[in-house]
Length: 159
Image 1: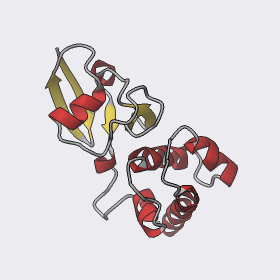
Image 2: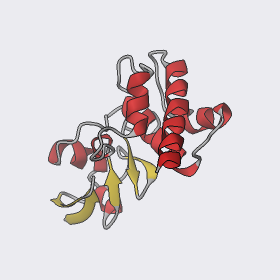
Image 3: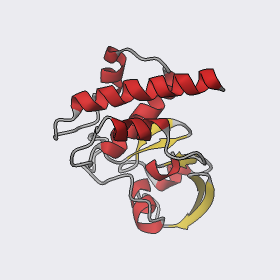
Image 4: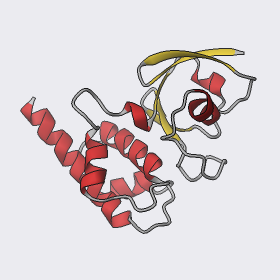
């Protein structure tokens, strides 16, 4: 079955069996390794992508559900000016240790800041609560989201 959709701004068509998970297509067919296979049940967040700007768990999403939609992976966040502000903030705040959860944390943070440009800490914690991290960089992750919000607000003010 051929499924056509957009990934990181590029139109793609994949011919895979019905029910093939989006994560498998992204990693195995399109070579995009930002989304990770974590739990396989859509509960840890490592596989998160944006589908039409909303966070989706690619490990449980059949690729046919992406038909005609825009999928953004970690690789697609950067623009002509360099990494996305959330990516920049995560680097600046050293918000990664093993890095396995990083994809989900960043994708969720991008969606959060698109919906709530100036979130308080409780809002950030609520948004990230379903993304599992076992390394202990939680404080750095919170700091990175706050920093990204400030960077994005500064960029808008300067535009």
